[in-house]
Amino acid sequence: MVERWYVVEAYEGKDEEVALRLCAAGFKMLRPVDVKRSHVREKLARSGRHVRRVTKRPRFGRYVFLRAELDGEQGACTIRAVKDMRGVFGFLESGERPSPVPDAMIAFYREFNPGAASEAEIARYGAGDRVRILVGPFEGLIAVVEGVDKIGLLRVLLDIIGRPTPLPIEVGHVELVEQGRRPPIKSASSRCANRELAQTA
Image (tube, rainbow, N blue to C red; front, side, top):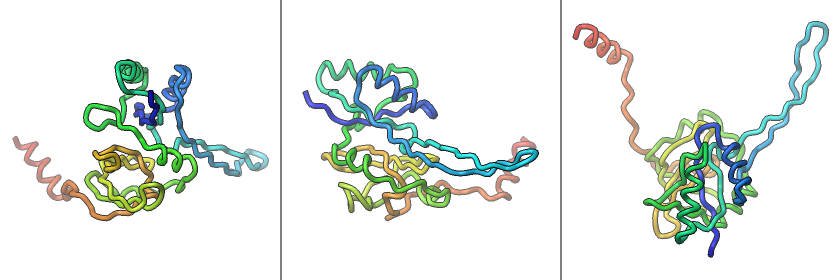
């Protein structure tokens, strides 16, 4: 039996619960959390004081990395068990099978963090964009963006095992090569015209 890393997608805000359930079930898993410490001056009625605050943010949002053996009959049972867990949306899949994440990518994720992306940086990317990987074991390869998370995480398709493999990659680890087609943005005048037509209909 060969264990590999896979990506489990949780429902929004359920990633921590899913990670705890996977651990309780005996799975090896990875859920990197970035910790930010800050001092904030709070104004009280009589005096002010500095309060230390700690903010924790899951680096990959709703995605959790799972190490398991998913081949064969036993693997099929494991897939069903994980998918049936409360809070789990499913695996990142290629075709109808969970896509393994290369060990080199997991090792890179453990060591490197580009930091939080700004809203302007996140807004540059959209589904259909072609991006170049800037760092890590797949530096220089071109990937296609499938989706963009609000925390600055891209879900991309990268050809690394002879087929398109879906992976979560941070905005800070890629550069835009070619922008995909964007849906047309309706102007204010056209929206008003549409409302008038709807009212007269």
